[in-house]
Length: 226
Image (cartoon, rainbow, N blue to C red; front, side, top):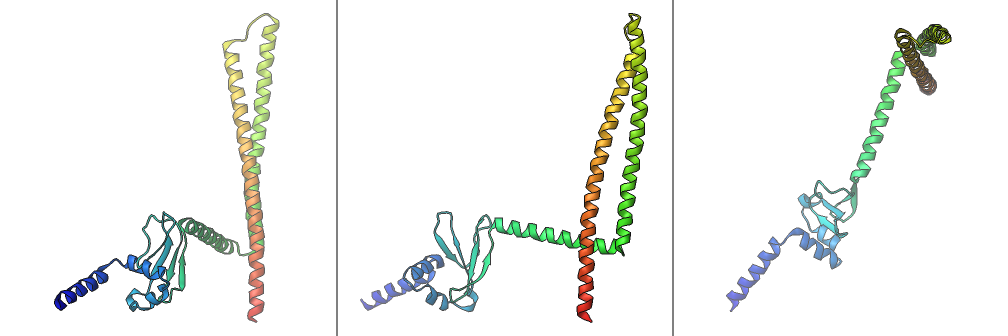
């Protein structure tokens, strides 16, 4: 009888030892002994992960949640205190984007300082770039004057034929259509160049403002070091 009882006791201990950690941990927490239970763990088991599963239930495990888990996770120490918070997927994406923007800004600042030794260098580069665009637009406007003059001559010839009761010749119709296409194309190019000019001017305005901020920060730092 005693041997049977001892054997049953050993089986019970073995079953308890091999029971899933999650199940044991949940029962300990439910009975108000979660912190005490964590304190009994060895140093190797000191880290636990707490998160809410898809059913809305709080889960405690000794390993992180599945890779497809999208919400935040808390990391607990042996005292049951949160020592770290792993952000959700959406939060991590936002953090990554903020980091990317910050790195891009730092790279832009470094490029400004290296590319332009002084503010005068920056303004000269701006004026040269805008002047190049302005020159291109001016040539296009000159081309528009020529095209419109050609169109007037062609339409004048068509009008004179009409006065004699003649329809426009095939050559005149073809020339007129070609000139109109050229006018439309040149107009589109002018609009594109003017848009480019606005963008370039705005970019240099931002760069100039940022350059002044960086220069002022450098001056302040130099005064502080003195």
